[in-house]
Length: 570
Ligand SMILES: Cc1ncc(C[n+]2csc(CCOP(=O)(O)OP(=O)(O)O)c2C)c(N)n1
Image (cartoon, rainbow, N blue to C red; front, side, top):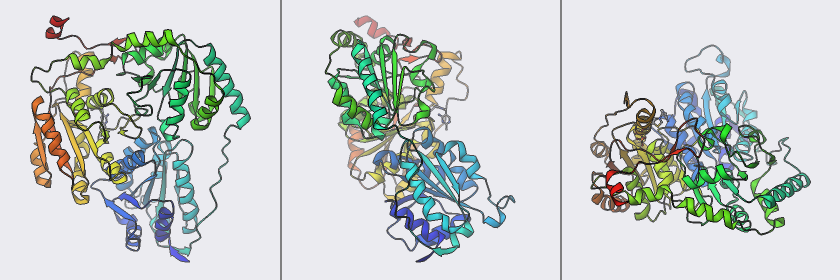
């Protein structure tokens, strides 16, 4: 069958199981958009800015586990995707980005809207391609989707010159599976390593599992649970690992790291064996590396060999699919308990940050953490929550318990402000039967609120909960703690968000006191046919505690100082 390059693109994307793309047209993708008219089964969501498309594709991918796809034109269209591509790269999100390029005859001539997007995105993609003729399209697209979703997932970019999109060629879909020269560890080799792990576990009195996003990416939540239960090992999760073991599980210590639970950080520092599963020892989770878990032997299991020994030197590194490795371990490991260790952890647990909020009487004031906990309670936690970046993100990690994976979607690695709202649109389109909320700061929301137009047009039912503290809150917190309370360039003026909503025809409520919160949540839940905005005007100068200051050891946590009222109660 003879097809144009543009038609081949859509044929192949559909065959990869994707019938939804987010994008924005332009000169260099006109043939692609024109061909789209022949593929009504392919839904295209017209965004308001290409960054929005990139985060929507990412949010869709994280919520569903499927590959998210975004399309943009050459030059500024392509560069507008860059932040989203980097966000997907740092968080291993399976995504494919398709960009138009100037015609092959003028590549390299600084043609109108020419930019070397494969050069620009080389370090922030798992792989990228510049297509030079239409015959390359089908095998390349097949390979791109394979790369995006296999091993450690990530973004792949395909740059397609305009003339290639119009070129007519024979379309042959490569039915055979993609074969890549990767060398996973053989079973025998894995078995030896797993036996070594079991021996180390047998000698340990204070083991701790560090569970990362790799658990959900490999679909090994059940294996994690059985592994932890069989050997009675407490589990702490990274931000992106939240939900891989239910927060209500008795072995779950909560999140680790800079704003982690005290018992989780203390457990790591006092442990004699860390078992790191699909995580990458980011500096926000280790604190000062020289003082990190000083008495612990370390085991690191990851699909990506380059992660082993990158930040933390380990006694045992295992490169493999977590599902397979954990299943092997479960089969041959003995049951165990670590009673003395559990008792100690229980003692530390009573120092949890959770206590801090329940003891804190708001005295009529609206605190962000309370709002977040209230949303959790009134929605019974049964929603997909996306967040933006900042204080509200950390409070969400602390107070919005997760029972399932893929229900907290947040930019962990890159910390991209502007991610939360478009990611929620993508998540809702991937999971239409689930309630989706975007928790955003007043600062971050203003970076991508232009996607309100997209949500209205698409009738996307997401609730946007704006935590409005009038500041770039997290930066203000650092100014308070480390820069002599000089709040320079962090107070931020916002529009009247309810009036903004009105301009778009979006229902909205402003909440200024604790007794209005529940009503507002009910109001939002009654809206079913499009976006809804709740603006929570919260205390301006609140702090996220506990906090491990940069450069400090993980157990040097600054706790919330008691207020005068609370001191009286002690
Ligand atoms: C694109 C981008 N620019 C700058 C930053 C640095 N930054 C991190 S948190 C933050 C403040 C966020 O403020 P806001 O969105 O109001 O949320 P809050 O911290 O108040 O909850 C800033 C500026 C960032 N993470 N991303």
